[in-house]
Image 1 (tube, rainbow, N blue to C red):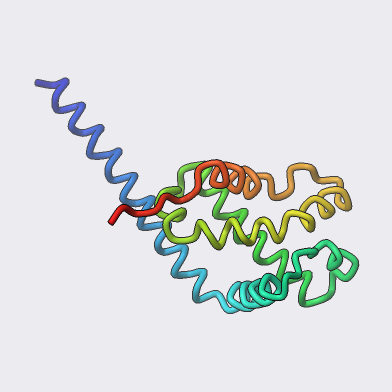
Image 2 (cartoon, helix red, strand yellow):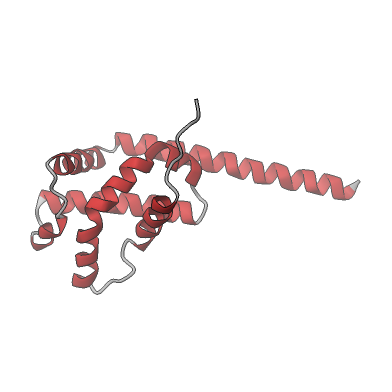
Length: 147
């Protein structure tokens, strides 16, 4: 009887943790949509992608520019999420359902900038969790919902 109670307690704790992770993920996405600096950065990035401008590395030469600041702000936001997913603070499944396509498209746009940024700052681990998440999701993209 004690074993059954203990197992039940463990299952309750695990489920509560999953629910809290999903809730934290939804809260994060809502907060990011309210973050004026992140919204401005995302709007700029969307315009760049629409104009087929994916060579963001050229902005490394002007660290005081709005463009450079937009790139780093968005990259740092993605890195925060990726670390949260990797450490299971956020629900990967929930975030992937909400942001997969945008994240993959943005990372492809950021890739050149990140590689050059790492060289310039001698920081091979900079944004490594975002790159890990990109590789993971690229290998296993969001599935189409069967109708």
